[in-house]
Every structure is written in structure tokens, then in C-alpha cells.
Length: 113
Length: 115
Image (cartoon, rainbow over all chains, first blue to last red):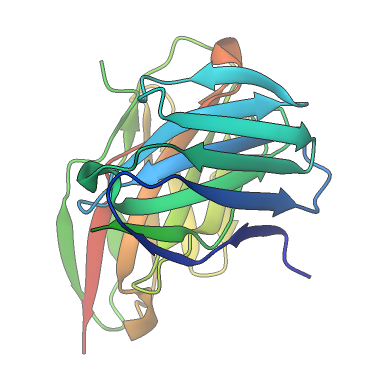
């Protein structure tokens, strides 16, 4: 069973389009996250949700909007895609305690042409 | 200030040798966790090892051990008997209670194992 799944794995699209990435976890975790990993492999936190409520919203453009329909899902919608949005996007989940690790999804490689 | 600092962008190690990947952290919270993740070229993030701030002993998981020096705020990863499959990016991370249990990641170290 896949613990944290993301779809799609690859996404190639034109500038200006709107796209969504879906994430689901079957671990019963309270907290879910979205990260962006750039070409230099730097991992940047974008959003964090705890029990469907936004708790971290780093300085990302408001073209990025997370949606959490329930505790097990955290989707990422991106409007008006730009070239600089090309990156790998990781979804992750964890229990809400400083002693619990994060479980990552396989990542979605987004390429904006 | 950076919460997690990894000062080695790239490291090389001979197969079967041990290697230490450095990580220092910055926190005033007495309750925190330290984590190491491996990211091979295939891209997935693999959890390796965890050390709690209150743990008295260094964590070990197979060939991985964490050299935890609390006073120095360092949490170095030691990989013993390196294998070719250990070639990957390695990320150190911290999670502290007083910032809502947010994770902080370092910039990573790229390890290459030489046959």
C-alpha cells in the first residue's frame, strides 16, 4: 500500500495554464505539507495543513492555492503557470509531534514550457 | 539565522569506507527532533534515522548512525561500509515544538561512492 501518493508524477504544460496536483495519505496523519524542490535540490516548504486547517503559508505567490477537502487529502492548484514554477513538488504527511518523521510522496515533476 | 546548516555541498567516499555528513542546527526549544533523509537520483525522499532531543544515546539504524552532540548542536550522519547505492543527496532536518512542529531542512549534501 502506498502511504503518500501524488498524481500526476509528471506534468508538462504551457505558460499561463492552470493545473492541479493531488495528494492523498492513508497513514491517518494529522498534518500534510507541500514542498517545492528547485533544480539545486533545495527543499522549500510552501504550505502545511493540520486537520484541514492551514498552519503554515510561506511566501509563495497567491497563484498557488492549497485545498484540503479532508484530513487525508491536500491538493495543490496553480493558476497562470510561469516558467519559474518548473520544479519537483513533494507532498508529505506526519503526525503532529516533534518526534515524528515526515513521509513523502514520490514527487510531481512540473515542467512549464 | 539558518535553522539547519549542512556545510558540505558534495562528498566523495571510497566503497566500503565510512563517511560522516555534517549537520548543525539552531534552536532554543528543549523539545525537538532531528532527522536524516536520503534522496537518490530516482527522486524519492527516504527517511533514514531519527534522534530526539532528550535521547541519551546516539541513534543507529543498520549502517546509519547519528553522532548527536547536543552542546555543539550537531547531528552528523555516519554511514559505515559505504555501498555504491549510497550515492545520493542527504538532507538533515529538524522539527521543533515551539514553531508548531514545523520541519526545517538543510541544503543537502551530495554523496558519491567511488568503486
